[in-house]
Length: 329
Image 1 (cartoon, helix red, strand yellow):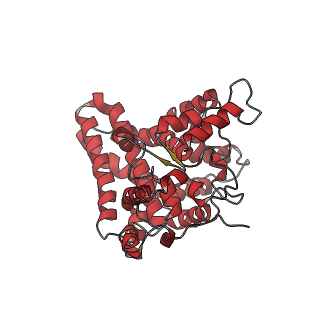
Image 2 (cartoon, one colour; image 1 turned 180 degrees about the horizontal axis):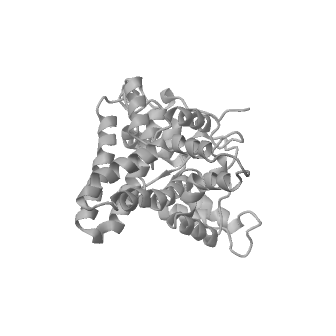
Image 3 (cartoon, one colour; image 1 turned 90 degrees about the horizontal axis):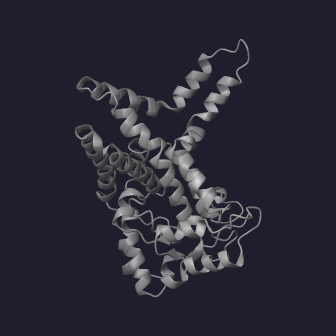
C-alpha cells in the first residue's frame, strides 16, 4: 500500500521559524479544553435563565461539543500538551473519549490521505452531490436521524434480532458499558439540576445539541476538509482544504482552528493554536496559491452540491468541474 506523499518542515521554514510552530504549550491546550466546558456551562446557564434562548444555546453547545472532539483530535497527535501523560488524560477524560482507538484510526487517515487505503475516503468520495441530496442529509442531521443511526440503531437492531429465550441482560450490559460516559453524564447532570427544577437541562441542553447541531456541523466540516478532492491526489499540498472562517463560523461551525486543515495535513503535529501562524507564514512565503483553499463555507457547499439534479448517476459535468477549479484556487 502506497502512503500519501508528505512534506518536510525544512522545505518551508528556517529552524528558528519552525521551532515556535511545533512547540507545545503547557497551558494553551488545557486552556482550550477549559474554554469549551466554560462556554457550554455559560450557554446552559443562559438557556435555564432565559428559555427563549434555548435554540441559540443548542447551537453554541453543539459547536463546543465539536470543539471537544477537535481537541481530542489534537491529543491524538500528541499536540495538546508536551507531557504525553497529561496530553492523553486531557484528550481521553475531558473530551468525548476513546482516544487510543481514535488515534490508531486517525493516524491511518493521515498516512494514506486521499489514497485508496484512507479509512476516511468514504466521507469525501460521493461528492459532488445534488443540492437535493445535500438538503436531505442536513435534514436528517437536524432531525436526529443521523445521530440515531450512528449511536442507537445497532443496539435496537440487536434487540429486535434477539432469539427467543436469549437473555436480555448481556445485551443491555454491553450497551451500558460502551455508553458508560454518556450514562454517567446523564445521571450526574440530572442529579445536580433536577432539585432546582431544571430536570430538562440534560436532554435539552446536552442531548439535543449532540443529536442535531453536532451531526450537521460535523458533516459540513468533513465536506469542507476533503470533499471534491481527487482520489489518489499526489500533491501533499492538496490532500485537504483550508477554509476561511469568519467570527460567526468559528463560533458555530469551525471552533479551535479546525478550518486550517490543509496546514494540519502538511504538518500534523503542529498544535491547533499554531495553525493560524503557520498559515500566515506560508502565505508570506508564496506557498498559499499551491495549497487547497476556499474563501468560505458557503463556497464549499456550492461546490459540494454542484452535481446536476437531473442525473445523479453520472460524474460532475464540465460546468461542475469548472466550479471545482475556481473554488480551490
